[in-house]
Length: 198
Image (tube, rainbow, N blue to C red; front, top):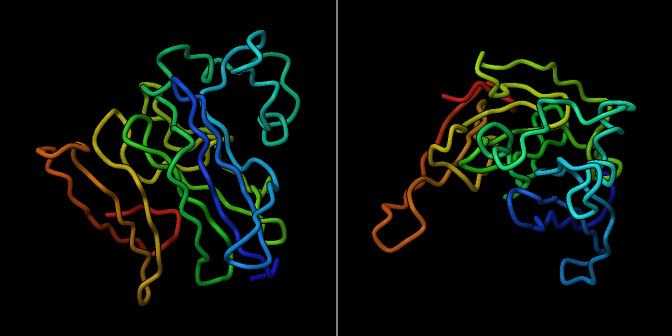
């Protein structure tokens, strides 16, 4: 609304959680859409392999200058055991006009971050203290935001959040994406856009 633009949030998926959600904008819903920038990355871990280097992400914009990759992100092939996957974006306004984006999937869980309504990109003034469940799984992470659902490789992806009445409703898909996978949708409710959802 503030930008007076149509915004398309698109996930570009790479192998082994090397993904990014980007923003494209247009004056008309039919396009043409123009690339505006990245919103959140996942799967970064190497300083030497240009395909997955954290130096090419916005990590330091969010966290400040880093001499090395923080150890909590240096997970190699175990990224999905702990961290979210930058896919399935859902963007919405809360009752106070704050713009949010939920994203993520069944591996590391579904997370939520604040967006800047003037740009449609990540709001780098948002703060998410580092908290874990004791085994290293983030409940809140300074880069990835706050976990609102899933994780631990349990089912759940394709989050969609909207405000209905006085509560926020989180819709999540469950099951295996196959003919006999039992694919279903479930809904959760919260008084706040960033949870907790029940």
